[in-house]
Length: 336
Image 1: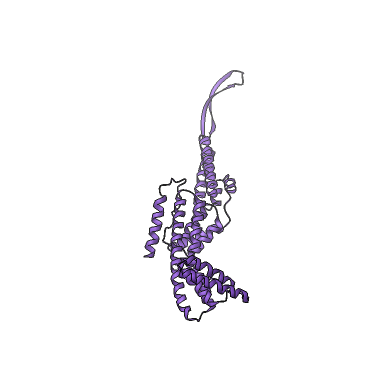
Image 2: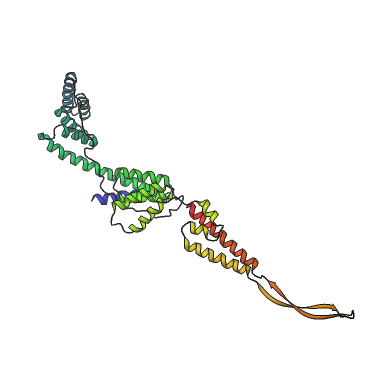
């Protein structure tokens, strides 16, 4: 039932923001899994009360009596405030700690009531009220965790909507907020990794994808995600180096890790150069004038070889265009 409620929250939030225009269409799909129940700790901190003075103990008793009177009159907030002051004055008093926990719960402050019950249990773990307090604490924490999960689902939905609008910074912040409330949410780690990768935050993206691999040992596509992490952990490509190496046919493509494109570029440019350097030899017939031994001129026909390069201009042009296009492609790929 809780999972269905989470999905409903995500759906409603997405429908509410779907009308916003997209600034830039997303280039990679996100995951939209429902969140797990948040894992807020019940009693996370150790309680080490100080020893009160006799005067503080007396004042604490006076405040506790005022709190009891306020409770009898139906003033729950006033009773809680008096007991809070009393517990601050005498933090070692077990009865005051228990009364404060009940007063916090009656006033509707679930998180404060949980802390107060933790404090009482730390002071009197074997008291008759400790068992009841643990049961009340469990109920309070279940409600708090469910509330955390709903808030996480809402933040997650805002992240997806922001990503679809092309607002990567806002999407990252929203996914981070969701993970603060639900730190074991694999889909939120994956989506934040996608957003961070788009923002060029390679280390953060790699860390998020590693969390996905940790949380989902049987993940489909695990090998592909592992390879992606390895790629993010490598030194980033330099667009300037890709462009400079692109002067040599295919050099930029080999640098950016795409050898097939580099080989095709090298082949295309090589064919263009070969065509431009190709030579065709033919024989030309022409008239030649000479003088005989007696000084009389005469004309005769002879031949000579003629060299031609009919493919020089188109061949070298094609090689240059292929090399230039390949270098620009490598430069753009390195920038991405």
